[in-house]
Amino acid sequence: MKTLAFLVFDKNGEISQKSTIHHLFDPCYFQDYKHYKRYDDYIILYNVEPNCKNLTVFYFTEDKYNSAVALLKVNNNNIKNLTYKMYAKHISKIKYEPNNYYSESDSGIDDISPFVY
Image (cartoon, rainbow, N blue to C red; front, side):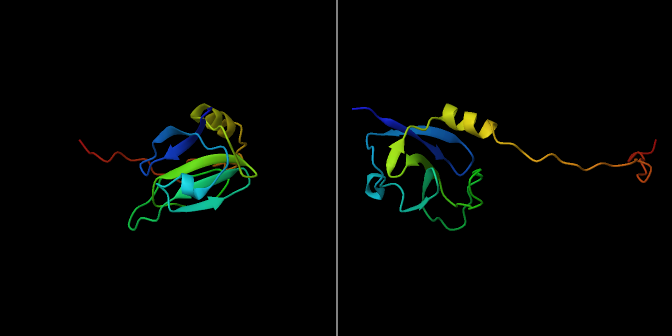
């Protein structure tokens, strides 16, 4: 039977790739996680841990999590393969807004040495 890959983002920012034999999403298949949120093409599985914070920032939501999270790619309720390479390729295509900040001169800055000899 073909296994499908999904990603796990640890609280410290590390990413690991796991696999599942299930092709349809059902929360009972992922016993390590008590909660989930559904987005357009993704499902995030997570737990609620007090006094913790996950460093991961997802491009498709501003939600923050406080435990390790699993990221599944889905189409309707069908789980799709999601490898680290696929996810990295997708986020590298995201267009960022340019920063239009321009400083006219550095004349307003007094650059002095912090040490006097």
